[in-house]
Length: 143
Image 1 (cartoon, rainbow, N blue to C red):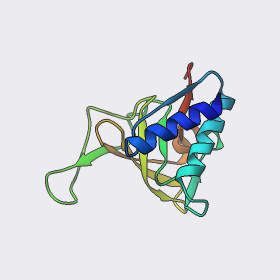
Image 2: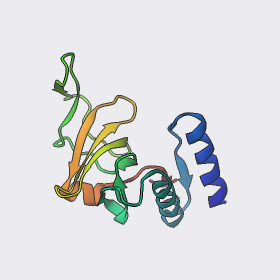
Image 3: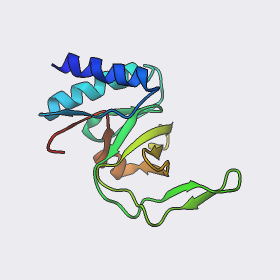
């Protein structure tokens, strides 16, 4: 069954140019295995990575999910001027939001990510990254 789920995810991903499919599993063991398999398919073995929650190796190109509300993490969006970032105060980091990882700083133990849906930007690091951010390709029905 996990193979069928992976194959369906790959089909959606290839057909939709990346798409936004989310796999739902009944146990974390299955979700973790699917997440790892998709990560290995999308991110090169020698890519720079950091360790997130659930010991997931996170690299640029991964989809991650934030698992705890945290209004203290700065969220921004592109402004009207080139290179300008504007703070987003009405849409903080929330539990269950999915993000595309756009950069990894292994030395600084942090990732930059773009939120799926509104393209807002955030940096996850330290304890929040290690405890509340993991791959977001598969979750459990209870998550």
